[in-house]
Amino acid sequence: MKLKQIQRLVTAALMAALVFVATLLIQIPIPATGGYVNFGDGFVILCGVLLGPLYGGLAAGIGAMLTDLITGYAVYIPATFLIKACMAVIAYLLVRRVGKRWFAYLLASVCAEALMVLGYFAFEALALGFGKAAIASLMPNLAQGAAGILIACILLTAITKNQRLADFFFKGE
Image 1 (cartoon, rainbow, N blue to C red):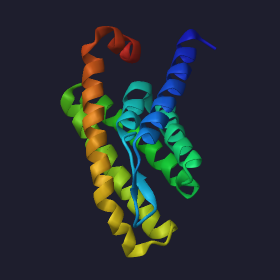
Image 2 (image 1 turned 45 degrees about the vertical axis):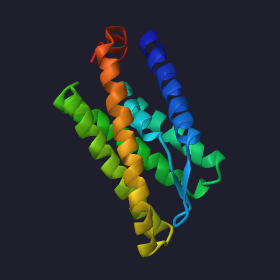
Image 3 (image 1 turned 120 degrees about the vertical axis):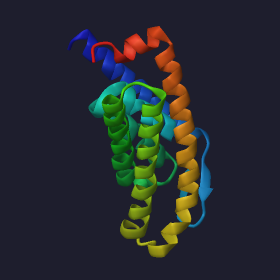
């Protein structure tokens, strides 16, 4: 295994741990659906932008789903893994297309969070059988999305402005 691959793998493991901790750190329950609002989404978006679609998607999905596993939300594991991995991939693709600028970070974050809101709504309404009751999760998920957008934009802008960090993550693209 090459040094760059090892660095990317270790960074992905670190990012999965950060997603896990940020998701676990603050959890506000949603009584109507049994889910919870958390602050991990900013790090999910960060995973995609910094690590690319494969490593970023896996780090985001694994970190978030492990939180569901240990906090008693096992029924959400498949949805969480898929939604968070897709959020990271969307963020990566949009930033790659638009460029590493604040506008790209904002656009990528908004699109990724829109996927999160719609993804959990669809999962709760269809797979969990909540039907119209899943509407109750829209506002809390929008609040979580807003927090994720803010966190991701702040962190990505800070990383881009720090030349050493920017070189570590973005060199060789």
